Length: 397
Ligand SMILES: *Cc1c(COP(=O)(O)O)cnc(C)c1O
Image (cartoon, rainbow, N blue to C red; front, side, top):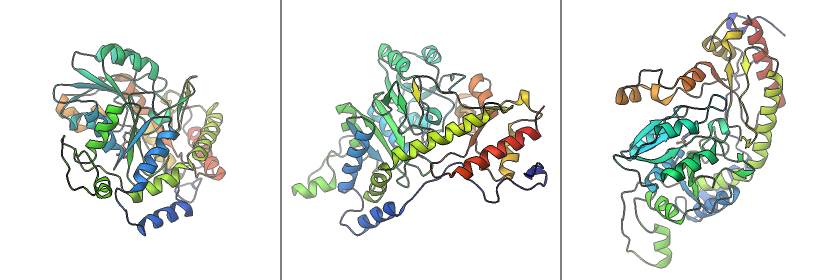
């Protein structure tokens, strides 16, 4: 092993770049898509319903409604919950901007609440402090695939007559107190972007046990029209009515064919991610400068991400330099996330200047997401660990 850091001109741990996440497409996925391309329906056909049924069953929910992206699915959930101008939704600052943006799409106001220092998911005690008479929804995020404190959040929401929309874009297949994420909140939102557990190209879904939400979600993704073209064609009807202002947020049969094929491999995918996480956690237990992600007793994470925290008190440097050094070793690290309130748009709109959410902001300063995807080989995992050991030793105090 060459101990000179690649960033200083040494030989990198790997000679090819390892991304932090990527899709796995097998020949059976390709075949499923090709079959659709040769069929009569390539947009909203029979596979939409088939994928929705399979997904709902997988996450132990009564209904699933698929959308053209996870962001569109979030928008649909906020619509279904009935949020509008003057309403507020409490969410976490430590997420992808879409979680808060979807509240703005409906003219409502996102209100951020501080995160727990261990899991970096929204802190129920902090949600309570942010509730007002206008709070209509709470949007927890299952950060990195670790479920938020869902029981406590549901209790708060019940008392306040607010609806819980769980952003589970990271958490397909995660468990909380032995139950699958999917029907533990009134609505649960998933994403099928290629870096997530399963992909449809672009795509997303909302799962729910509630008939009324189910109905409203279906309306919203199809212009607010009460029947779908295929239904009308089958029934020999031309009449339709638009009853709400919706969008074209439909997912294609092409995407659903891919989703169905990918869903069959979800369990193997989760198993592999859990093995990789266990290997990382074991390797970093005694590595100064690296703090592994916390896992609470009640949680079985889905490990979309493996975000370590750099403990700069134990190192001669900071996250920036560690990040650059790992990238130079050809380890495709990333950072999740810049706290949403610190983005220029939110700073300008609400006057945030930094310092409002000290736990989220301090966590952000130390966060580095290591490569995590199920097709990683044992050699890939070893390379990530070797690079972390090499870099931390080089910068050790
Ligand atoms: C990926 C993601 C989304 C949005 O999903 P898209 O399918 O990319 O629109 C929303 N929230 C979180 C936390 C995500 O990671």
